[in-house]
Length: 77
Ligand code: SF4
Image 1 (cartoon, protein in one colour):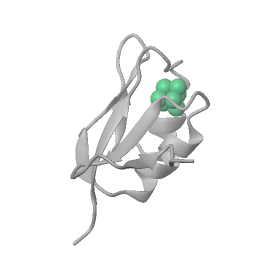
Image 2: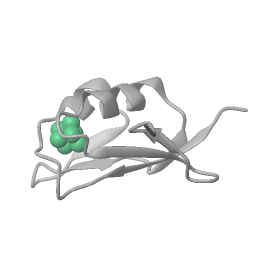
Image 3: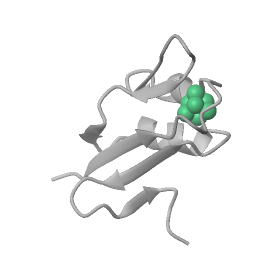
């Protein structure tokens, strides 16, 4: 069975650049204040969502494992 992820956007950091929506149109939406939200905060592991997190210029997207909370992105040093 694949991993389940918990996805959060730190809205104090998000600058509304929309790279996440570009990489994962099903994964993120911008609200009227151009702040990104995960469409489903708890989701199956997803390459587009990971690509979105990697593409965010301010690392506003944080992904952890739903069970246990280990970091997926940004990875632990
Ligand atoms: S890529 Fe990052 S800064 Fe840009 S809208 Fe998405 S979360 Fe916000």
